[in-house]
Structures are given as C-alpha cells and as structure tokens.
Length: 379
Image 1 (spheres, rainbow, N blue to C red):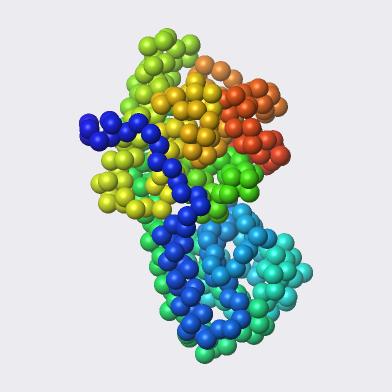
Image 2: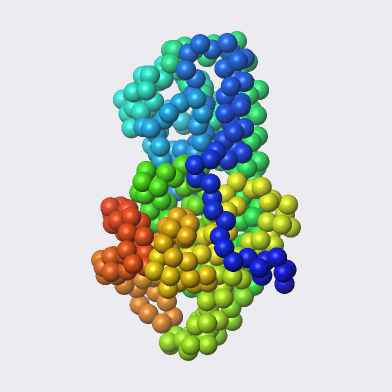
C-alpha cells in the first residue's frame, strides 16, 4: 500500500472563504462579457445544475451579483414554465422581460425581479444528450439581449458551458470509479441504491439548513450532495461475514469495521491519482466525507479521534445524515426506528457527539426528511 497514504493523519480543510478555480474562471468570463458588450449596466452570470434523480434545478455558481435572495435556491424544473425549453432539448431561450412570467413562475423569478433584473439569456448545458445544467445571463434592461448582443455573448456562454461539463465530468468520473469499486468488491452491506439516495438528499437538507451560519456556498453544498453517498466506500474491504452479521459484533470485529474509513480514504486517493484529477473541485470534500464521517465532536469517534472544529463541517453534516439513516433503516441486526425516535436519539447525541446546528437543521426540515425516508424506502 502506498506509504504516502499510510502517513495521512489529518484532514485537508476545504477553503470555504476562498474562491475555487472554477469561480475564478467564471469571474474572468463575466468580466470578458461585460467588456465585449461595453455594458454599463449590471450583468449577472449564473449557473444552475440539474439533478435528474429529483428533477430539481439547484443554484451552483454566480458572478457579477450578490444574489442573497437566490442562495441555496432550488426549483422542480417541470414546475417552472419559463425553463421548459431545457426539457424540450432546445439549446437557447431569450426573454425580453421576466415580468411576463411573474404569475406563472412567481417563486422562481421573484428574487431576480426584486434585484432589478429583467432580461434573460439562458443556455442549456448537455452532456451525452443529458441535461446537466443551465447557464444564465441577466440584465437590468428589458429587451437587452438583441440579436447583435446575442452573437457577442454566445462564445462566452459556450465557454462557460464547456467549463461546467469539464468540472462535472471530473466528479462523475471519480464517482463512476467508486461505484465500480463497490461492484467489483462484491459489496453486499445494507447500502442499497435507495440508501445512497437517502444519504444524498438528507445531506443536502442539512447542508442547506446550516449554510448561512457556516458560510457554505451553493457549489460546496452541491459537491457534498454528490459525494455523501460514497461515505462508506471503504466497506468493500470488509468481509461480508462481519458486515452482515445479525448479532452483536465482538471487540475484534468492531475494530475491523472501523478500518473502513481509512480503507475508503486510500481508495479515493488512488482513484483520484490514477485519473489525474488532483485539482478536481471538491476533492477535499470527498476525502473528508469518506475518511472522517465517523469522527465525533467529543473525540470518541474514529479513525483519528478528532475533537470539535478539527472535524471538517462536511464530515459533521454527513455524520448526522448517516446516523439518521442508520436508525430509520432496516439492518441485519435491527428493525427501522420511527422517525420521531431517531430524532430523539440525535438530540441526545448533540452537542457532545453530533453538531447541534446540523441536528436542528434536520428537525427544521423534518417533513421533507420524512418524505425522503418514505420515497426511498428499502423493500
């Protein structure tokens, strides 16, 4: 096994207060658009990513505007008539005045209109004929995107689309390799496809709920949503006899189970290195989720016994989601707990072991959490 991997003893912090390379590139393109158009009016360049599993469009990155009203915003694409073009396979949509959609898309457009933006230029981003997101450019002037301005702006929007496909394809490549590792490793634990979906959606609920207090960006939340299902990838290295044991584990068996966090961290590091994706956006988030999701605030967790803020917030969020799903799911050694009983246990564990903000965020979104448990129940 790689000696460098064996020497890893501390997490790599995700720089929450510094723009990543993708945002820097987006800001540079925004400035180029402003220069090309000779714009003396505010222009907003934004990206929303589409999740086919839930039909939800989530804000991801923006430049040129302080979009406080659209932070962590999400909408079901089929419920937004003004964005129907993206579902119909059309590449482009230009709207002279968003006020025309105010009644039909009030929830979607209210924040943009409130900030004074009226005209919209939107381009669907597809990869292998699958919608992965939409790039938006907005102006405060109705009718701003004339045919001439559309010709000038098109190359820059195309550049943003290529960046979106590049960055998301890197993540998809790593995730595909991790999924393959699960399958090749004959991983038979209780982590069903629905378990992975529950982990993703519960994690996003919690992350959205603590985003303001912990200064989490939309991009951070999106990456955490995509990486959370891979938290237990290291279990491919644990024997089924232990994973599926219906009774209580012995001390030695539990010690073996605890090695899955380190095994998972090694797998992630090897895959990232083999694919040459050391600079992949969100790499530290993935590493921390896999390696540190069993750490506990009081130092009683594993594998490093980290205490308090030494545990990255992404690992603290996934820890709450993981405990909640474990309690409300059927396992070889237990029946699923009622949601209310699981919440009582989470409250008991906070704030000594679990992040109290994360537990409170889950409770605040309990109707949605309950729907996730029911919609993605194991059968």
